[in-house]
Length: 305
Image (tube, rainbow, N blue to C red; front, top):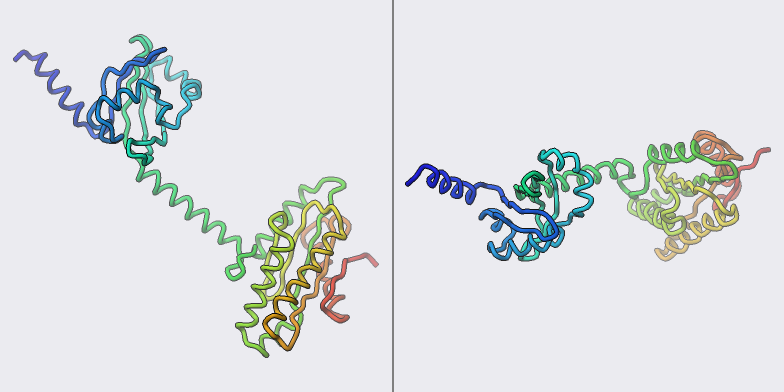
């Protein structure tokens, strides 16, 4: 056996058994597949003839790549015949999806010959995605009150400060401070379980009244806050606040409490009542205190004396 024939046999044996897929094509108006190794077919679940037909119909037929964008983004490497990487989500024969990391080399001097070697990196990508989801979950949890899942005090302060710093002319925001009336007495009379139920019921009522367009937070204990951006109508803000009171009263009345569960509410509008978090917080709190001094279970809007 000649040395050349032996080298060729060894080469083909190695190429059939390397732990990565290998495809060699000629690109052009009609793609021609020169070579596909065994690993490429195994990764994709096709026999050789099926895989060749698939590739010749077009890479984008089974890989989530845009060939024109791929060429545009790697044009310098293609012209220089240098390798570049492509990460793609690919559908296998049995319908499952795999992530493939490919290294591509295009030789224009060889008639646009394309050499593609690829590995199945599905486990690596899925583990990374899981890690990122866990990190995002932890970041999100760090912004929330652990009991009600509303924003915590620190996050509320950060968001309000950011909104006030970017406030435009003619734009008005509202800071709403809420405090449960006689919370200690309710806890003492009915137990902490009922107190917890009251806190959760109020959190739900706030979400229903103000929804996702507002920042809603638990500032501590039985103290809550809502920050409404780009107020269109002060009257509407007050109506929504009153709906929270009505909702809470109805929900708690259904539990047959002898002592009515109510809240006192103070509202401060920016920029009239303040241009920073501390001013708004203190002035909404002053309005709330005026309600507490009277009969509780009411709403007051901060006004300069």
